[in-house]
Length: 437
Image (tube, rainbow, N blue to C red):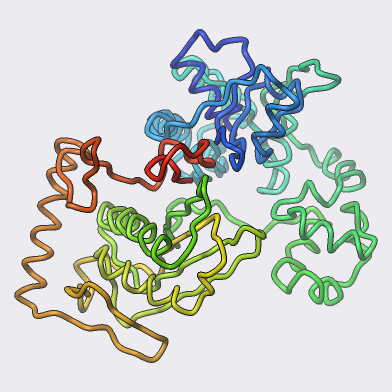
């Protein structure tokens, strides 16, 4: 089963503000560099869709209401959504906040029909959360995902056609779909992969069945080629993974005014390091690998990473590593996006060494070693940091802050999912020129 909440972010905003009901609503960044993350069906009737630049969305729908997004509210609804799915079966796999896969084979022992269970699930989600969802059923993830899309409402000639809500892909329908589906409908096939396949004359799924996997691998890689060859036969070997391990976390920020010069970049990096460090500590993890991503105004990107022999969760250490990585990047060019990511996780109390930098500046390269301060100073630093984290957990993120987090407005704590998570607003001054996504 694949269950997917309809227009999730936008729907939550309408639930919380009924005056928006019936209006074209989108969640995203309203500035020139913003992007639409979620659009209500009223907005979709005008052609607004997710991943569309906000300036284009406002052009096709001048009355569009664009809201910045409130991840704290979406996470509340998401937890309730997951709890309802868990009541049906514990064998489910979340995909972000608004989608899940579930393995329904255990229902067989209870004598429950999957179609009945799916309909009851959808009814309960609507009754308890006020949200609608599409539910797809199939013998594997490929067909379940395709089925959930088929279950949803769709816009045709600016009119809304209601979907069935629950859709099952029978064996006969599998054969029909494999003959008419475009390759773009397949899991993992984005615009770039679709373009490569088109160059080979492969536009439809049926075309993939006549191409040798080795030939495909030369153009899209061995892993993708194997998946595409299986999909062309209607096969999908992916299982429902109940407890998927976290692989990475990070903070990416698009700037309303591009960064210019190393000083501005390093200053922005401090905020990124603080966000990533707090996220690590909230999950009781340390990271061995730190990566930076830079996107320039010409939309070209570069990335750098460093893997340590131990884990870190200290913002000064993470910031110093990130700054060192940026030393190999041409910072004379203007930068529109900066990202800092952590991966290679270890449980915090199993970490062999905790790194902390007590220096204002630290230089690293691929061959150099980190500077470790004394254990006494390290213990003191960890104790202070943990105390600050505990105060924030009890009394809110802005209840206490470091000097770098103080502004004329008080304590300002950047988060992974900020007030404008999908692109910056129009820049008014330095403090307003950044937002997170």
